[in-house]
Image 1 (cartoon, rainbow, N blue to C red):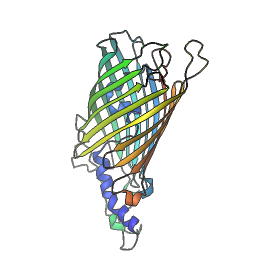
Image 2: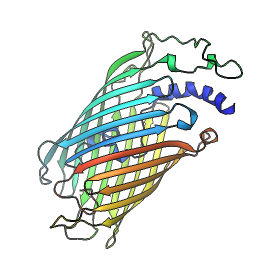
Image 3: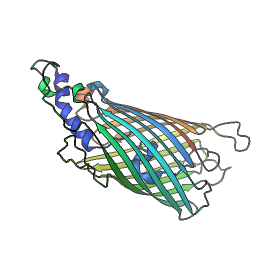
Image 4: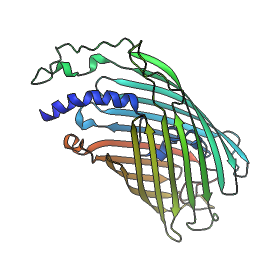
Length: 344
């Protein structure tokens, strides 16, 4: 009974949250086009990935997010080029709760990266999006349908939305600094990578209201992050760490953590008979929200990841700690063959 009552109380909060906050991922660096448009073509000549996230399933109908993205450099892979242009495409479906609040979006991203030195580049990107947003109030369970003892679907919901489906254009921009270093193709573990950037999304403040005569401007999302990968010299170990910050309206999010990667099989530089195989384990935290356990498997040009969010907020009393599960699959191409870390 306590869980049922809490679910009814949570519904309005979920609707408000869904309207005011963008989707967040526990693998933000593996969803680069939703993190910063300047990441398009920044670290890879070509990259494609698919994401799936299921959140709050222990409380009933969960948030489900499915995303697919692809981006590539369009003027060649040569690292010596002064300018590198890149194009990206992102598709996303996000469904929140039993009332089927659904966002379907497509975004085209254009980025350019300028060489500052042998190892450093600075890039800028623009995001042009188109969003369709719908709600099906008939599938929802509303507070007015609670009869004092339990949910009664025969009671009227009292909900009438004059604009249950609408569309809008969306715009964003970002800048990025990238540092990469690889001593030589024959060196063991002297690789370094650093990305740091800031971005803004929804700069045109599109109207996000389900009421045709109403106005609910989508808040601008400000994002900043820094993440990197450093090889431990003369070992098969790599340290990966990052911090990501988002602010949108009255909501903010801080995510930080570290992973340890172990190279199980190194690639053969000349014959190509062996494909690099590595496994990573990480612990991350979303401030005042969740502890996140992450597992990655990298094989040659492919990556597979799984994350589990364990609630540490007051929601843990009702979710049993089961916050979210997230998986992704990635394919990438580098300038030549992947390095031992598979990043360059």
